[in-house]
Image: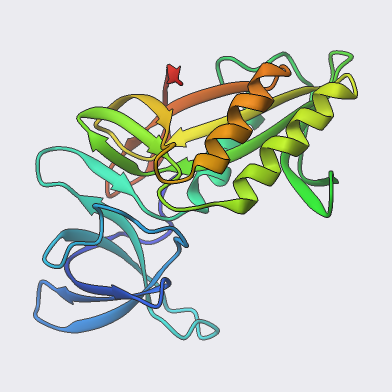
Length: 233
């Protein structure tokens, strides 16, 4: 997935009200950017951090910049836009370029299921439907290890229970963790942050829900799917 508009570098001044961030561009101007991330962004929103913004000239948008990347200035990046994983995975699914998923002929996004929920992707074609829920992973507190979630997520626990229900009905179900970091080689559940979610994952996987994780290749030009990495519990 290539960015629609070339990104511009900036320095973060502050992130506030969850969806807003003030930043200073290289020419000294201060701008407010939309932050498409409802999580805590633990370790990613330190004042002075180098970030990358995507400008826009859409008259319907109040903010003319969107915060897309954190540049760790050591050759590694983190993508902070939580809408990216679904877009990147959809592009890969359409070209059958995702390891670890069963054969399928049809990809349907946002299909209703469970209790007033919509599955991110429903894959059909080999006799069994595969329900795929996608999570964006950006937290890392240990070198090389990504963690989800970065804040309490009642919605995430609900999704795990609903995936387990699909397995009970005879379908396949996959929790797909897309690690939007280039510095991680495995992913785990942050049980200390949300023990309820951790318990939901343990219960769902015991019933047959599969957990799959992949890294991303990230640059100021594009974000694409990388390699399959282990999920550790």
